[in-house]
Image (cartoon, rainbow over all chains, first blue to last red; front, side, top):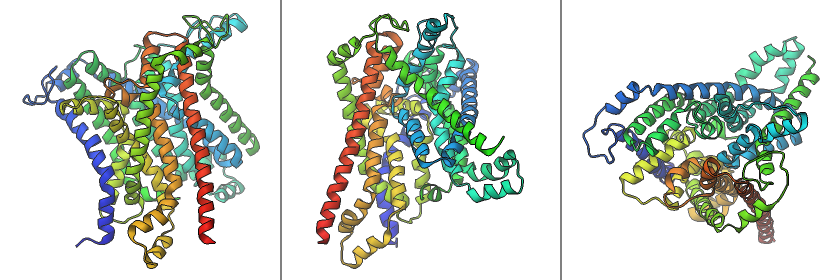
Length: 283
Length: 271
């Protein structure tokens, strides 16, 4: 016999759980199944085949995967390094400074990614762009542009994903006891030793969650490359979209998507299973 | 380096990064103030003409309406599902809760474009016609977990003694929920609804594959940026940003008014 608490919990979890099964797990199963259908077919009636995965390897689709993994790694490292001093400033300064800065950083998250990246595009454009035009006007210098290079894609990724690295890091750093740091200082610990032996270990859950979030989202990012990088470096989701839209080859697109999902799951599952969710959200 | 110096250095760094983060938005505003076919900054003449064009265009009205319909539906739907979802997440202790909590986190740690494509594959395999309604569903898959987490933070802080006292005084479960629990988690629901609205309003990757015949504002902007630039495009972007700012202000004002009214009613109850 189930307890009352058990029955209530099960009943209450049903609405979101059904939504996720129908809208998340089921679609992923459809994608995986489609990836075993013969190339360029629609529908799920044909006998399964591994052909799409063979094609993916033969037509060197590892290239977009390599670009995406490179982009995601660079973005994770860069946003982490950029965030660290900001997170420390937010944790240690006055409440007013912290709230103002947090709000200013959070607000753009609610402006469409494509719109913000388009703004970055207009800023970086060669000649008549906002940056190049201003420098030309003020200094008479004609500067080049990073637009349509992988560097522009990277800048866009740093720009979009910085808040996702920063806010979990702030949460982590806010757990560092102030007096422990002061005691370490009094005992002659160098700034680096304070970071290494006090701040990093205590803040690590926040930093790890933030890094993972940034890595996974950057791995699946495509708008940055579309709007800023042009065709200079094609990330994996762009390759998948091309299979779906232009090539009308859903099975191959699904095969690439399945590989991406496997990589994502391999990174996300170990962390999520170790997370103490109750402690994370109750404060 | 002395600690105070380090502190100052960090603050300067923070301000520098903040300025860099706003450059793209400033650029959009600057670009919208010209009437030349291509961007040639600094403009030879500055004008608000693109805004007149943007406001005069019937199409932008339709786009705003489609985006609004989707965002409002997603916000409503998310809040309705997130209330039981958050109670199951944080309030009750049941076997399977740990698994449920983890399942709920998955869509957040997942590339949205792939989620949109997966929805497209599934909906077309099931023979569903794509429209703004299918976009609501797909948005909800991503947004409901986020709203549930936001409401859960509130549920963790619930004062359970109040609920138990209500039961002791003979309240039914529904009465206890509507008189005790719901008012306590209301601020969480309010932020959750606001988040849901804004996330849906600005979403592109999910809409791109699931709106079918309908077009949302971010979708339209995206296609015009790529192929058919005119100063009206940044102008429409700025207008859409202004629309969401107005929405946030109205929402917060309404929230303050409701809180005051609730306080008044509660005060009268006590008298």
